[in-house]
Figure 1: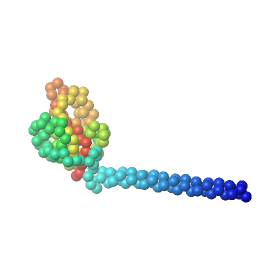
Figure 2: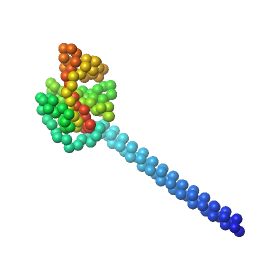
Figure 3: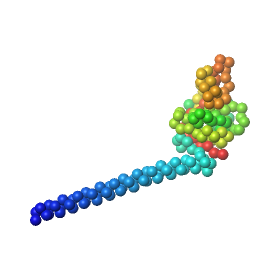
Figure 4: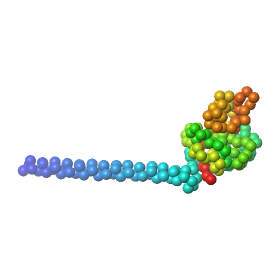
Length: 182
């Protein structure tokens, strides 16, 4: 009789243990499915934006930094260097290798433009030229070496005004977030 009771309790313990493990496995399975669905929804949303259904957004969400007229920056770039701002304009061209930079202007056909980089944290669609943009980040003013100029012009299609020694003075913008639309 004692043996029969011990066997019964052992069997009940095994059933309870198996039921708990099964329930826990089912919960993990449900959690994994939810995670996959969330990732798929995010990917589908990004595809919908890229497909022209809305704005293409890359990087961080654009915050509440002060908006600065692009024309003011071009007149006095050193005044805005190192300050976090938001600018708007038109994309003139995009890196055709990786989408790792874009050249922007205040309006289509403007004589001056600025190269925007993303610190390799994100990229933009290679066909974003002529799109409107809004971006948050910091301007800088620097001199590009002759080698940097050659790489940007020959390999990536940038248009830079060069100095007699092959270097170029560049106003650039390091964007933390970008929105593009037609």
